[in-house]
Image (cartoon, rainbow over all chains, first blue to last red):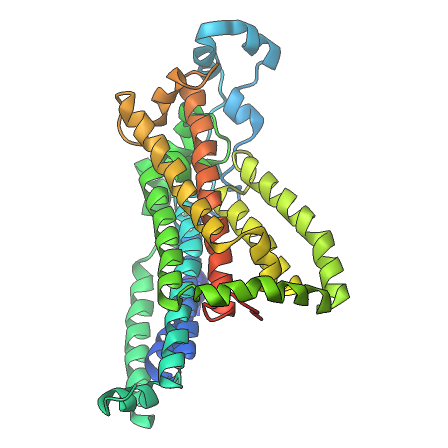
Length: 151
Length: 255
């Protein structure tokens, strides 16, 4: 039981992924296969995001103003001129990497979600053509028509 | 039928069992010292990106600068997906496209409540999506999110007032032009860096072109430029996906 509680994020992603995999293998309807594929993809997104979590004390991967620009006044920085950036570097507060959530999984999944929508669109377009051509979205019916040389 | 389901069930249970067995070797939930969280790369992004790019939102900094190649080709994937959908479903013949003009009058027959609600929501939605895009350096947001929301505003017009109404605002050729412009803006930024003698997408050299910037702020501003490119492409392709799928490629009527 403790094994499940400690690894519950992995359990959720495995269960979701297997639901998606089962739908992709067992369902005959092409749209239901696509639904399975999307569930599978969601499982991977959850897995990645859960990898980047850093326990209780960690916050979102957006730094505060002081963490980026230092604690000195803005007006001073404007007059500092050429070596402004070096000054700013000197009095930047230390960042403990353990207090900021890992940004890399978020970046990877941010792009994966949008690309997932676009590729799902392509899959739906092809399904639409198949339905238009064979009059069905059922795999068995389509296969039988292909073997008969129909369409 | 049934045997296939049994085979699938056995496959799924074996695969799931193996994956669950393997989770014992995975780092515990929220472990700050796990390999992914404690890698030199992750720590470099968290500790050094503020010095190197001056962008508070680490996700934006990694997305648009450090992983610029990745994001550029994700944008290309979105662009190619839009082209593929148009290629698979076709754009309809010129006769059908002429019918769009005529069916535009059907706009009046649409439900008044839907149209008025869309009229109220669309400007706010578009303005907010521009805010999400422009404020991506400081808050969750950026090109992908802003672009999807801007595309959603056109989809809302199409849902409320009919597809011809939305196409009269953003035609398919216009959307394709916008999508290509987005990829060009992204790739062009990289090429300009190359012409100035740096690596592709190495933005810091752009301070020679951008006025009143140093090498750090050049990266900061170049990120906004490429995010705008991403937003162009995503906006156009989201609308193309909806328009093509809802009208089976004929671009008339729609839902």
